[in-house]
Length: 115
Image 1: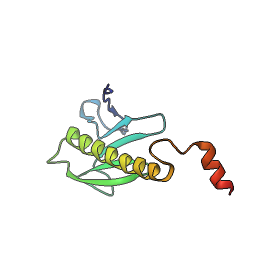
Image 2 (image 1 turned 90 degrees about the vertical axis):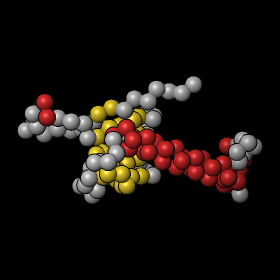
Image 3 (image 1 turned 90 degrees about the horizontal axis):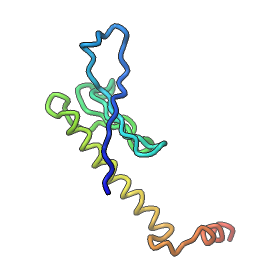
């Protein structure tokens, strides 16, 4: 069953910004307690571009999408696909080391380390 995707506006606003002029610029999707995908509309290193943050894999990564041409929803969709593809690569790499079929137990890994 697919979880509902809930992005949260985490934009910090200055006191000088009037309430009616405040527009979201930063969204976060919590995947776990420790993992979060953050999409930023413009960034000091990437002005006018959508930026992805997903530590430790992506730190201020320019999505190559203009904020003028692409919506926040489009940028969030691209970011999620990139995160999914990255996690697949990470999972495959770990499975190559310990075995995808769970043959390698923790005990055998500890035993290998000791030898």
